Amino acid sequence: MKHLFLLMLLFIYNISFSQNSGSLSGKITIESKTAQPVTVELLKTKFKTQTDSLGNYKIENIANGDYRIQIGCLGLKTITKNISVKENETLILDFELKENEN
Image 1 (cartoon, rainbow, N blue to C red):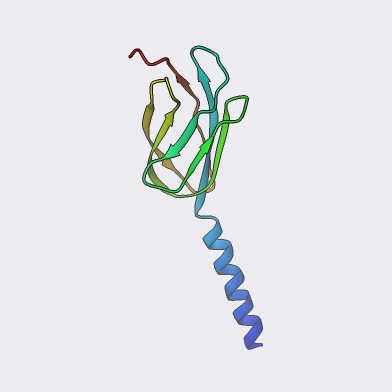
Image 2: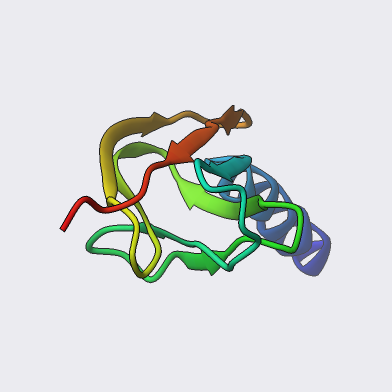
């Protein structure tokens, strides 16, 4: 009986802990329409990915909270934006990168 109680307690803790995260996804388009990988990063975290060949990205298991997302690619203007990730939600953010004028 003691082991059953402990097992149930661990199970409940695991369920409640795993639900405190959200995800982020979207599509990055480029003004020049050339297919190139774009880096998507949540600054000051370990979360970083690159777009696929169609410009899509996804980052999962992000703890709830406020972050700064940065979208960048060599030769294009970098975009930085404040975002909020909420529990059990997928935040969908699409961006268009423009050519760097330098």
